[in-house]
Length: 129
Image (cartoon, rainbow, N blue to C red; front, side, top):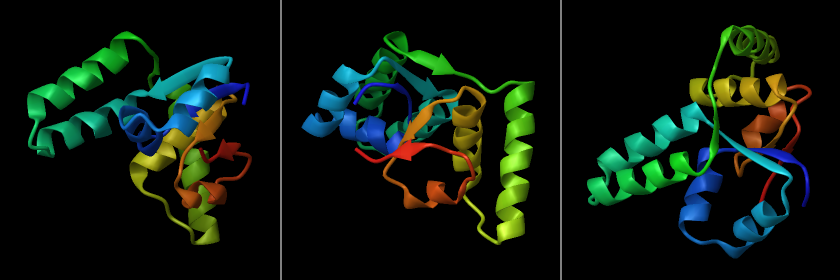
């Protein structure tokens, strides 16, 4: 599947687990980005694990070979719009996921995720691998 993609945490974890479908789709992608928020979630997960140093090293390796998107003032504006729209619909999402959605919208990227709740975000393109 070609295109410009932003990876959610669950997709990076699937990549770490060597899931063939994720690896195959990534090989066909035009561009792939990882939100800094996802890096934070991965570092948190690594610190909770029984293999802290090995898992942190894996995250460091991912960062070194990836294009990481960070939040800026435009992301914050997008975040405010997304969060308010979700509030009006009575459909809250976890805070980190709102930031991830805001980055995807800001950069016109397709979010790759296995979390169905992202479908609540208006205008967000998403796909599950």
